Image (cartoon, rainbow over all chains, first blue to last red; front, side, top):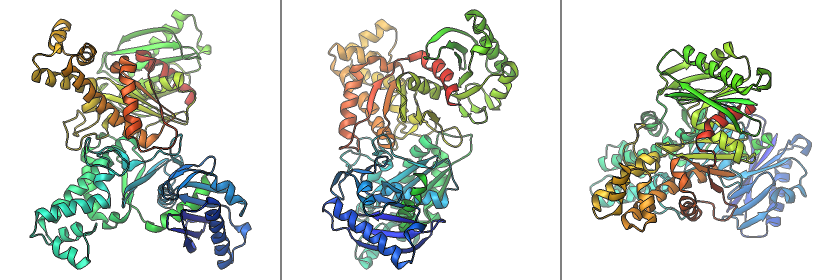
Length: 313
Length: 313
């Protein structure tokens, strides 16, 4: 049994996770960020103790606690090097946590935790594994030989920030033309809105009105209803996603490439054209192809991955 | 002492390499490709024996032989999975070589061999190391924990084939908009030629005439002479190079990033603006920066890297 913590800007979520990576019990408390890291860590530890109590699990049954956290993490030294979301800089989270619960503690970036969760459950021990999330941003994680790869300073694996369109639209990171600026849900919403402005007759208007907003579903749902403008948005969006994946494939050729995040709920409707595009455009024409699939854990990936990352300590 | 072999489409080059990575003696024979791999391997082994004889080094002093080879390599099984240059498919080179010389034999892609050479000499044992060559194409290699990373099928690490301009100019690989299509010497020559057509008054015309051709040096040399059109070509080219490097940095955040290939002979004139661009545009704003430098081994990198790769067997 492990405990996994998903430390977010809004909530601290945690779960008891069994050896097979199944969440037995979970709970959450508000992060109340920004405040001193010592206070946040005290609440994290309290949440863990509460989970053990609720689950009637004694501490000697817990092999360790894993912490997924937004920002750049110095995993080796157990430090949040920099987190904009949590307003933390050089915060020695692991050392502080051990004052409350003295178990093996791992810490990793939250996107890396989600990646590790998908790896632990769906990776079949792959030597190389890449996880991509198509969410508000485009995030991801790279697992090589069972360990999260994040570079010498903990800031690597920012897969959403490869350039897709040199000189393209501005990205939140300060650069322009990043993959994230074309393949995130936010980008899809921008693309959908632009298409709606150009196509006043599109069914997307009616659908967005019913839903109360333009969302990542607007174009996908209406494309399935035969709306041509929506289909064009979807086709273009999928091409952006797949074009970035080709870069990832040409670099990593991982045993497995898993796509998660909100948009991944489109399933085969998303996956099949992606596979077709990647097969056609990747560099490798003669050797075995990367196994591309859709994530299965969704929101649980962070807690499960954080928990299971204790194994890679 | 090791032997490193650089198996090219035209020549088989090999060298006796000492433990410090210095080439003591080298020689070459024509590859005479295409012909059966058994014949090529026999000549490779003969070349090694000849080097030992010339250098007066007995076989028990040789710790192993490393072979760098164009194409996709299944290093684990010692097989050239596919090589267009050598017209080889599933050729069990290592097994065949051992019939002639029974020593530890490593095999790796030629760009990876060059990367490993730079790593062995200039890497200071870095946990993560990326080498980029700006040559006829844009090649490279990734070394993680002292081992070449090339994915599950041996086709990974194709760093020149990340997309830089979605929907951009055609690349030799069949895709469009690859970094290689903007940052290789071939691309620089194309960019120079285009600028010359638009700027009949540019000094580049006179320089190209003297040299007998437009080359990768044309724009660089004339920019240094104050030619404005040449300066624009250089600025744009450096931006393409640096923009691709930003993607590489955002993914890998390697301890060291080394730039080699013909263009790298421009030294600081190339390196300084690259560093400035990368610092400004990379995702990481708060943590330590990647150490970017120019390669030192040039043409010897392949033989040295192949030789030293025996250490990572």
